[in-house]
Length: 379
Image (cartoon, rainbow, N blue to C red):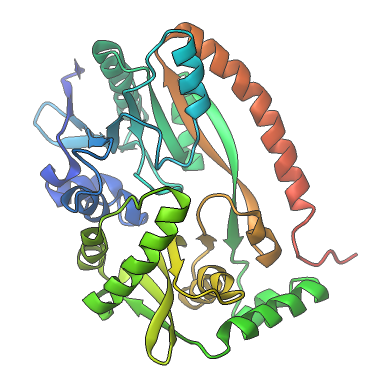
């Protein structure tokens, strides 16, 4: 597709794009849209042939061949690993005689973390990329395009383009200038403060907790974490999304942005939580354990994350999708947004009507959840 001496190409993968060119658009603030992370998914076989996630990044070049815009995108043959659930749309469309798959997914695979989805320096270039996505769907018979976990500043780009907006709720911890975990605890009700202290004490009994970053993480550590991850993946998704090679590539390419928190008993790892560090956010991603120890999950995934965020001066912790149990541990309900363009006008009208009702329900849920946060209500 060409417009204004601009050309939009659909590439074979992010790995084929020179890292400096991709990162000049993606920036350094969000680890998941970096060339290092996206290329690691491709090179490890976590996405690509046989996975249902076929890399198809959109690349916008000017008349001189310079890369001025991009979108991480994938051709999908299923709806797994997205965390914004459209299985009902697919089933309804199939009953009506339509074919929902393949579809176009503008996202970071297996990663329900907010981030930029249109990588460009101008609103015009962003709009051109979205029009290119629509054109690809029409030309190749795709049912539609879906952009998930969009940052708030990019929502207007999709809204102006006429894409349908879908809201959901996640639980994030917000750092209000705390100097220590005790400072955070002081903002909670006395009952919740007491509960959190008890949980941390119980989780830490007989356990040594280690925080490892970048090249501090050895192959043996990754082997242990791979065991934890496989167990969690098998129970949650039926099969793990990531390959063993992905974890080593993350550490190799992202360095100190990778944080592995391990729990050990007598020097042997028994549980772990994998995190990624952004400019202002700690992203909790994967957890697993080979022991059933009360509150260890909360300690590794939530309380340790808060400790790290405070120590690094980060503004928030995003601890992944779902999980109302995070609410009692100081994580607050935050709205997330996805955007959807559907080629079939009938399907688009039906989804628009559904989303209007769903948004009302999500807004009401968020208001209700806010009333149940554990923070003190002085006065």
